[in-house]
Image (tube, rainbow, N blue to C red; front, side, top):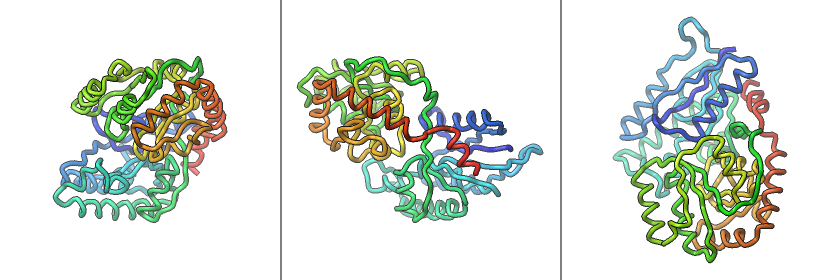
Length: 348
């Protein structure tokens, strides 16, 4: 069976969505299928470029290339699920969030465009038509499923994606640092962690790993750390390789993931596979499907003082970190997160 995996591409930007698409192609190939990844560059500004992207995807013909018939399409992100095909399944990573859950937040740029509301309405209409026409609609989390029903009235099933090389995660110790691996961008809220350190009584160390989407924002974070006199408690590693990531998970005290309304977030199950609890926030979305407060980690209000107090509590109670880590590992291993489950469901 020839299968095309469709994903929107933001050039020079690589995150969980890009890794997931590559891993899905590999998983399909390992099970005897003939997959290929088709990406289309996606630029959401100015507004006419966004509209042009919608039109371009609707005009694409991917039924056949060079005499090779594409038997199945699996679309992952907007606007690629607008592409027409006779046998299309969706595995929705997220919708175009500025038209949905980010509309009334500080993270929205669409609302400030000249005809932002009209473009938003266009996106919703196109999503409603394209998604409702598919017999098989899956999402990567309950959070994404809930959004799809809230904003579009459409139902879907959940397929959690496996972390890359999940069999390689291991435990070594509960060390002397909290680990926060993530792209450096306002939605991930590294700034809140920096501000929380100013409220900590202990000399808590945080290791940040991840590439900055915007160097100006990164410089602002470093300036904020200096302003609060906590720069000595912070290590910025930038982009790291897979083995270094595994080692840091294995050695940290606990994992931090305070992202705003995250779709899924590989960081949570990755930390749990390393027998580490996860500290997240009450509005962090997908992480809350894995983290139960005082059981598999900590769930804190999105407030710097409260987050700082919780960091202190764990830092001074290492037995709690072990309890959370053991529980977290048992939890994630009980959830049947596997490529066999994903591939079987998408192709059923």
